[in-house]
Amino acid sequence: MDSLHESCAALFEEEHVVKVDEESIRKYAATLKQPFEADVKHTLPFKFDNTEQELNFVALYNLLSFGSGYDKELQAQGREDAHSTTLFAVIALFLSGQKLDAATMLNMRTSDMVQLMDIHTHEEVESELKGTTLMKPTILLEFVELVTSTLNDTGRILQSRGMTSLAAFILDVTKPSAADKCTAGKLVEALANVFPAFEDTDAYGNKALAFHSKAQHLVFDLYMRFSETDAARFDFEDIGQLSVSADMLAVSVLRKLNIIKLTDLEAAKVIDETRQHHVLDPLLRAAAVKAVRDFCVVMNTEHGWAINARDVDYELRKLAALPEFSDMHVIRRTGIVQY
Image (cartoon, rainbow, N blue to C red):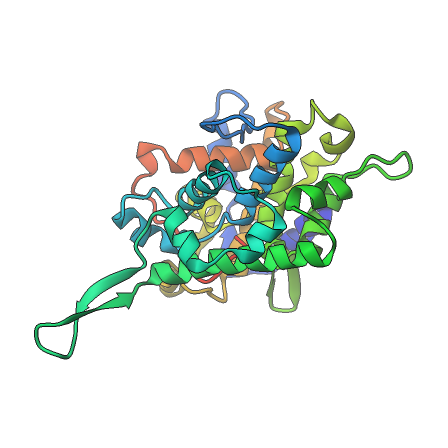
């Protein structure tokens, strides 16, 4: 993952409309009183029968952690956001007694997912014929179709490789070996190379950027959950080299802190208003990676802390939920399953 940090840092050796404000990093650092650390474990309303079952649940939830561009419509139906909606669906699927395996994923239908999410994907509108109405699909149908196709594609890939589940794939990659112990970087690359929904790559100009945000989040999640109980597989020596999850929530919080700045106000307006991928999105995401890496350096060398980018990632998401951040504009994107 060092190559991602280096690629993102290299981008900002030149002047861009997106800037990482080092002075703001130090100002924010000066306000902090004590170190923070990540804790990504979810409190769930049930217990797992074994580690593999829990691992599979965590992997499936991380696979489907996308869709912030649909939050507004989901909130109108009483949901918190896209992430909580997919988590609700995975829990419902688990509690139904179905196996969260490749066959279930491959055979999932859009109508099944609508029921699991318990949301409406159509709205009643007036027809051209007086006194009649018809049901028109909303943007949430697109969201459900993306979730369903992600499951179908992942199930198909697993079966083609002779794997019964995401857990089986991960356990195979992390199989203890005296000659070659699995690292966080190796598992991230394995996930990204095999599953399109984990292959989070983008480019700005001629510079390729392998963010792999969801894969990194999953790997860190596995480390937090299983590094003590299954150290041979999940106590990754290079865990501190992972980057922040370079999604738009991280970008938005760092903008709120004035650490990431957009000097072109017209471009900033377009970025904030659109829900489609913008040409400056890769630069904003690269800025988040660089800003968090620079922040860690400041805290560790000048303040005596010992934090990494994943600790900061967790803190950024905590900040986003605070009342003082309620007026923060969050950049949201539709049609993307990689973050």
